Image (tube, rainbow, N blue to C red):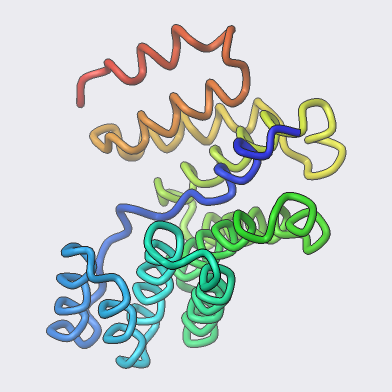
Length: 221
């Protein structure tokens, strides 16, 4: 099993979900901290708001901090806290798709530090998929959710090969269909083209090399 591909594609995060209006000034302050790279401060302020939007932003901020900046000994605990924050967002409103995407993101990052076999034993792959699918059920035209599910399918197929369908019901056809739908919904988002290219390579490097190159060179429309 290709550990790097398997773990990487559990971690796609919603990057262009529309902002809400709850506690606008405070949440904007938290977003400013986030864009400045002050992730722990952003997480602290956002979660203190005790709102769905605040917990979702806090989960995302903490997951990014944990992955890129936290000392190795702190990563797992920090990721588990990010999962808890995303779950709090869902408890406040279980009909909000962003909360489920943040849960998928945090859980995917947690899988990276726990390792492949623990991730398999804990069922993280299935839980990530279920969270993304719930986001899509709630918001069928959410580009970020389609992109996340496409990348999930591509990553699992790329890692597990013919076992992907048997173990996780992951397949190339669904990966490509969701990539195409994400591209239809958000044609000007560069992240869609990037993830589509990476997903194509995960499915088959040799067969999709030209396609990936074309996607990366494609101008915004």
